Length: 207
Image 1 (cartoon, rainbow, N blue to C red):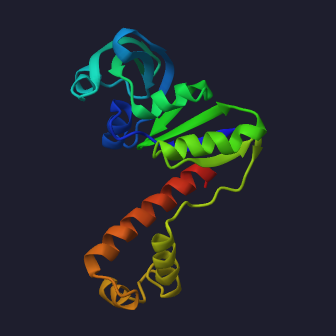
Image 2 (cartoon, rainbow, N blue to C red):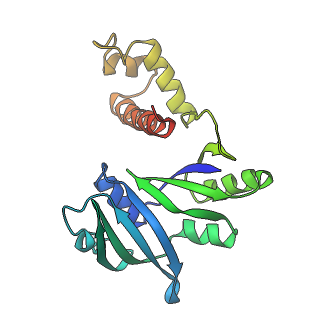
Image 3 (cartoon, rainbow, N blue to C red):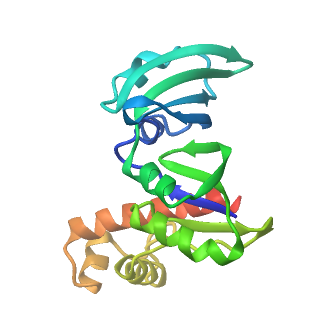
């Protein structure tokens, strides 16, 4: 089954991908080593620079080296500290296939699990605060659904019905905030999050 999760905030690859939103990073391999660290090989689809020095500045990175360039992709070997999410997945015997694609703070996994364990896998990932979303099961695509909180969903529906997303807008941010009985600042921040969720949904759905 294919799952999309949020990259852990403490993981260098998640923060690096959030900083370079257009980059596609592929985790090619990852091997646990002594001291609780992981040594992984990563491909970054930008060979215009050696990104090893920047990668090495993240607090969880022990060392980083550029080892090769293939076409337009730079290949890196990175030793980094294991995240709680990865530790939880290993303890729970959750298996996945490489490569794992990472882009703009999101991770695209292909999990190896029986259908009967699907719920278990999703619960483990949810426990790790990874915000998991199922994209396909046994090679059959499922219709993805944006993952909103109840407050985000309510605001989105109100904004949509009120013409906030029309061009030109039929309602101002101040007027929308009044309709949902929230202050303008909180509505603005929530709408920013809603728009990001919709953008991620569009990318996942291949829109």
